[in-house]
Image (tube, rainbow, N blue to C red; front, top):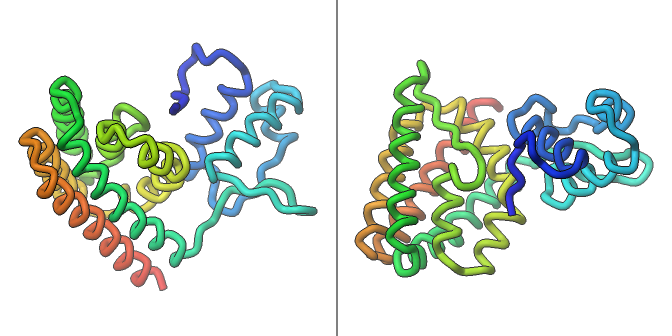
Length: 224
């Protein structure tokens, strides 16, 4: 379950977890930064007990790591680790798209197309045509994995890896010029799912993620 950062979250620790998670994903807390319990406690007006619960939640989704005698720090993946995640996504999300073509009900397919229409409006309104998706049900990839109805894929892609993928999608996707191209690729994948063409949906999804990985590789080389 993805906890959205709404004002009606039940506990203070949930709210701190959500707001800190989004700050990490959006880069407002930089990779490698030390997490200061005292600073977070003061910022959010929270005691150490609920704060540590929020930090434990962040560690559980892979956004921070705890090290003895160092404390909690925001995760900082190497280039090799980042590219490994892309390879995992290519295989697993390709499979998810194939299964979504078989299992996704018509109302969810319609929701997928509605999401892409909102994304098209967002890209058109951004001066740099940046393409960043909000989390959960507003995320095209998340919707497809959920639509696969495969609980193992959902656990791996919507929980274990999800926010790490969001973090690096935000960092690289917002800086690249692939927004309109990525949207077109998403539309073709959604059309294949709507036709119940699992083979084509998988091929298109794999090609889409591979193109994203190759784009990130080019950006990493340019920074060297």
